[in-house]
Image (cartoon, rainbow, N blue to C red; front, top):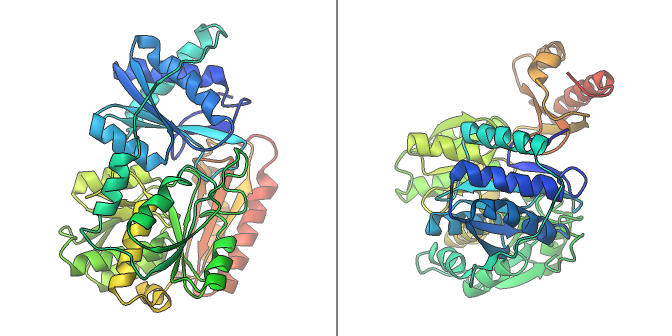
Length: 444
């Protein structure tokens, strides 16, 4: 099966699905699509990253373009460099996935993720190359990009407009990923009382029991050190999950609610609107309505959020998973930037992170269950239409059901919101069980 673009780029098992040949031809297809002379390439800390980045560089250089190597850097840094240099760029990363996976996230000149039409064109070029080109693989030594983190670090520090984080005890979990070096530099430059965990990548410990998907270690460290705030990044640092001083998780919806109301109070939300996805909690939608902030909803994926922001002139958007886009500062989700701005918000409001997080919104009980499936391209609304109708009817118009195919993993995601945790859990588990019973081999 040939890998295809999902919610956020292309992902697969390194060397098995995402092979050196595939990556090299992907680079060639992308280079032909953009007809570009120069490219930027970054990677996270997976042990497969360097080899795949070299294969990618060879493909990108096949049309005689120069390739600049950013090294191990966060995805938002790649996007920022793409914007500064007006070059297309590729990040070799599987984001929050396990170490044995890898992936390709591609940006057009200006640091913007690609449109569906552009992705489809690259996919078609790639398909043709895979069918016609030989197995020859070679590595390309890209030109090192000098001091790749200098401008990015400066922009993060300057986002506080001269303010600092002095007096704030912050624990940051770098997920043994791409931000392990630069994230601590940023918070130390802002004079935070900083405690760093999971910043010793070995190629295989990225996201392993840590980071935004598994924040328990961070919660324990926040409590043990009596920190004001915990910040958990994912492997490529484009998303953030926070932890308040009592150890409670603060997700992307809560952070987005805090940012939206704070921006509005400081006249930084001229559109009086935010962009969220269909996964966002109903509590966020109601909180925005209470604050006279309009909400636009999109499909899952921060590129969809950004597209809606750009189309409608909206300054702020994000996802429950922790991708938050600040239009004034970046063109993609940026976990480090989100952490900096959240810590600043907490400090300006008095530093009581428990009370501040609790005041953001009233979350509705929401249960998410992932069901493993054999294929990734599944029209779930069609395949499981009756099961979804049956599950929705059990909520008696007091909640909602959302079932979708993951764009990053071979999973069907089942989400149920209800008035009570018990009802949401019961309905979600029953629906997930019905879907599991239908999954025998590849789905239609």
